[in-house]
Amino acid sequence: MNPPSAPSSPAPPMNLSTKLAYGSGDLGPAITANVLAFFLLFFFTSVAGLNAGLAGSILLIGKVWDAVNDPIVGMWSDRTHSAKWGRRYPWMLWGAIPFGLTYFLQWIVPNFGGNPAGHQWGLFWYYVIVGVLFNTFYTMVNLPYTALTPELTQDYNERTSLNSFRFAFSIGGSIFSLILAQIIFKTVSDPKQQYLWLGAICAILSTLPLYWCVFGTHARSRFMADRISTPVDNSESLPYREQMRIAFSNRPFLFVIGIYLCSWLGVQITAAILPYFVVNWLGLSSSTFTLVALAVQGTALLMLFVWSAISAKLGKKAVYFMGMGLWIVAQAGLFFLKPDQSALMYPLAVMAGVGVSTAYLIPWSMIPDVIELDELNTGQRREGVFYGFMVLLQKIGLAIGLFVIGQALNVAGFVESSASQPNPVQPESAMLAIRLAIGPLPTLALVCGLILAYFYPITREVHAEILLKLSERKRQMADEA
Image (cartoon, rainbow, N blue to C red; front, top):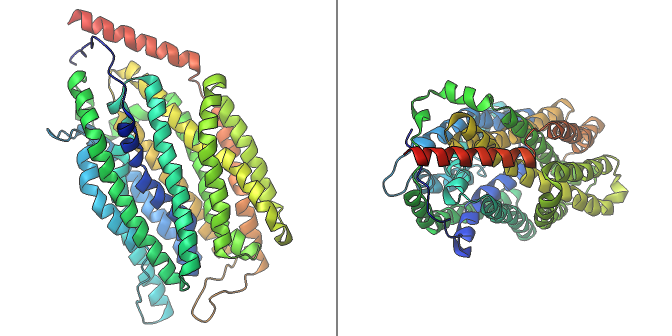
């Protein structure tokens, strides 16, 4: 392994335009992921007319494919060598347009004719194929993007600042997508046309910022690459299974991915069931649902900066416990909410948003600590591998949540929409399944996340010790060279 050079002075801080360009890279993935999380299962069952069990299976199949492509793309992006664009940018450049196109195709309702069973299976296979393709291109643009952070700056505090821009764009994109949905649902009457317009506009708005990110951050990336030589990556010769073994032998990493998976299970289960809860249990319109979702996301955006300041004083664990505690109380309140108490949805949504913001902030603030521990233990930098598994787990959380909800609704006798019954009356068993999914189910996931966070071993003091040892080793290598 070649010794890293020791720069004579710290790199100049990033300017505002570079930080904004970096943040924009998460806008498209956030918009698409948010709309899919809140609307796709509802679209399948209540607009396309798919059986709830088949709908949940479609989403699970797509995310199982992600169990393969996320870590592989992460490792391939580590090994990509482009003289002009480096390791990450070729993936974003080539994947952006197919990413937007396959996203749009998910909102088309093809007519397969024939008997009802044949039509159901035709829809099933259409959405399976399109979903697998979309998940592939989503990984191509999003995974290399998430691994850019350590390549743009080596300063610990500047990385935190950079991620605050990222999540501001991410949550802002989520809020924007809900506002857009609200406008479209109020101006377009036909449900199929509503989602077609929503898919087309979001596809365009999700693709363009990726190019802003590439062209706005590439100069900084090249500057950092030329300024500080990177150790030779011996991991290129390691097979896939060996890379996985190394990653999963990192004990703190197991805690981080567990915390992240539990947090996003809570987010995705709630997001998936919320349209059913608002429309079927409370008897309100779908436009009311978007207002509730806006209350959650808007609060999460504001609290992102509050939690960041509190974390600097009290630590990551304390912030996670405070946020999750409020979120659990909110989920319990939703479970006990009656149809004539719908006004209470909004304060409960705000309370949930306070907790949701910690699901964005805390696990992603832990992963750089894990990567630096891995560097200390192995001498390698494998951002692509670790970020690959983090992105994978976000999608697994979405898939498991939607699959469980779809199967539960199917078993409970949920009646999907049809031409003869656009708004069918749901049985009591389906109503109970909706209430259980809005309260006890996500609460269980959140409690598991709290237990894992309690045992997470990298404290502020441990991290300082890791950085000190890395600094000493690099200094020794530079002296020996």
